[in-house]
Length: 394
Ligand code: FEO
Image (cartoon, rainbow, N blue to C red):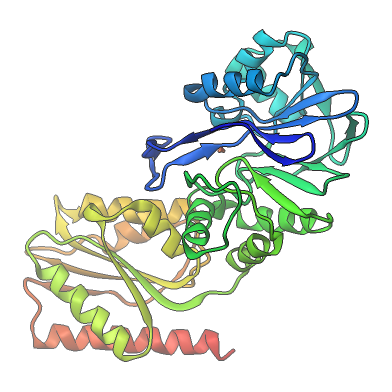
């Protein structure tokens, strides 16, 4: 990515990773990503806000050369994870007099992970400011978006919030600014779902904190810059609220077609009752899509056949993932089929200890579904409608 000016003496100098397709060996990146790094040239001091993933360190170094930076005073580390801080040692090698500015917790992580010595740091606390001459940086601690040490940096005179992962999206695009379209909103929602949803309560407090600021631009460290901060702040407020949608998410797996037949009947039954439904054939699904669907659904129904004397491992994975992501859902049920025993209900329930949903009586059948079984599925759809009506009319 070339050096791009955002405002006078404020530049984007990071890298676009068009090809990256997985993060943390877990999270799919269908649209690639970017590692945004920002250069602020004050009348007296120069600061770099976040670096890039070490895979792209050459691009950052080249951009700093292209920007004709001869002296760097500060490297602001908003977050210790490698995609933002992994290139700090390289930059310190090029600018040995630079100091790393971050909070105590992040400093500890950077000492542990990157072996940066203590004397390279200046630790700041919540609300502290740092003058670059005619520009002032203010640091705001925003824990749990998505690590305990995460913080954001606010450029006071230009009203820019450098939010790091907060409000970001894994989206490789040549547009520096967000267009506010559906692709971007989906990308941001997917990102929130994958890493921030488990910390929803803390994120809500962080939103309140940054909302006190007078913000013209939100410049995250992944994805485009927001010229309309309300676009993403409003979306985050909705995602982190306690509100759920009249919707059922169905992660399912089927080996010989019985469970799938049940799921397809169930999907139609829900649609007939006016309930939105999102089925996911787990082995064929992008887990980011499943995570995103969990952000505001009222109900999850996990569907599995019995295999190896329990739930299919794909269904176990879906239950484990749901539990880890801690969505605000209210109800859980199950569909399943077996040949000689259906011993997976307690197993799946046991995997949901973080979220403690109300369990609606599952429908577990023997063999291929028959007339009576379809009637039970219809009853489950009725029960879910009743439960949804109880919360939406309350
Ligand atoms: Fe983009 Fe938590 O790293």
